[in-house]
Length: 373
Image 1 (cartoon, helix red, strand yellow):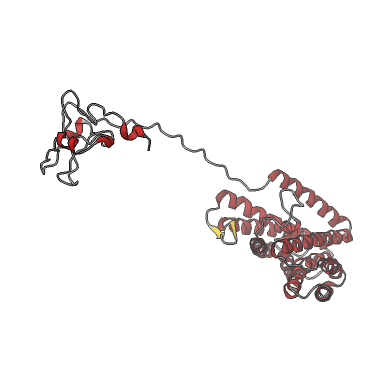
Image 2 (cartoon, helix red, strand yellow):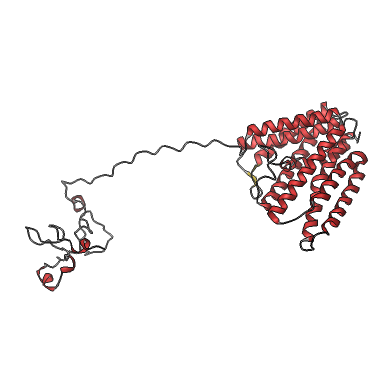
C-alpha cells in the first residue's frame, strides 16, 4: 500500500468535514486519527429496527449504512424516492449463434479413394490374368503386414517378435495353402511357430515368453488367415470367389461408413471404437446382404440369391468383428494406425483388419453352398 492510499487529504462529503459540517457516519481520515478527532466526530445515529422502504427485508435489522468510496450509497430509488426511477440494465447485444460444424470422416477422402482404386486395379488385374501373380500379391501384403505389426509391438510394448522367421514362414504358408490346401497351411503354420521358438533362443532369455507368444499370434493372425484367400483361388471359379469375398467385405465397410456417418447416433462399442455405431452396423448388414444376393446369383456357379443373403450377413458380422479386433489391438498399443504406407488409409494392416477374419468365413460357406470346386 502506498502513502496516498492512507494519507491522502480528506475530500468533502466523503472523509472530512465540508462547509455544511461533518458528515454523519463519516469514517476517520487516515493515520492522523486520534482521540481528539474522536471527540470531534459526531456519533453515528441509531437506526430504528424498521427496514427502509425498498431495502432487504431479510437482512440484519439495525445495520448502519456506511458512506465513503468503499461503501457506496445506493441510488435514491432504493430509499423510496418517487422522483427517481430505478435504472434498468442496458440490454446486452445478442451473441451470434456458433456456426454448425460439418461432419468429418477423419481422413483425406481424396487420397483414400485414389489409393483404394489403385489397389483394386492391381488386385483385379493380377486375379484374372495369372493366378500365381495374385498369390504373390497376397504374400507381399502378408510380409508388409507382419513388419508393421511387429514394429508397433516393439515400439509401444517392447515386445520383440522375430520378424525373419515370421516373414519367411508367412510367405511359405500362403504358397502351401495354394498348392496343398488346408493341410499344407496347417503344416506351414506349425513349422513357422517352431521357427519362432528356435529363432528367439539366440537372444537373452529375458522376455522370451512374451516375444514367442506374440510371434505365434502374429503368424496366426496375418499369414494363416490369409491362406484361406489362396485356397479360394484353387477352385475352378476361384477368381470369382475371391472377387466375391473382396466385394462383400468392401461393400460392408462402405455401408457401415455411409449409414453411420449420416445417421449414426448410438455407439456400438464406445470403449473399443467410438466411431462405430449401431446404425452403421445396420448399414453394413443391409449393403452386404444385397451385394451377396447379387454375387451368388450372377458370379458363383450353382449359387442362389438366398445363399447370398446368408453369406452377406456372415461377412458383415466377421468384418465388423475383425475391425473391432484390430481397434482393440491399436488401443492397447496407443496408436491410431498401424502404419503410414497407404495415404488416407494408414498401413497395410489397417486395410487387412476386416479382410483377414472374413476370409475363412467366406471360404467355408462357399464350400458348404457350392462345394470346393
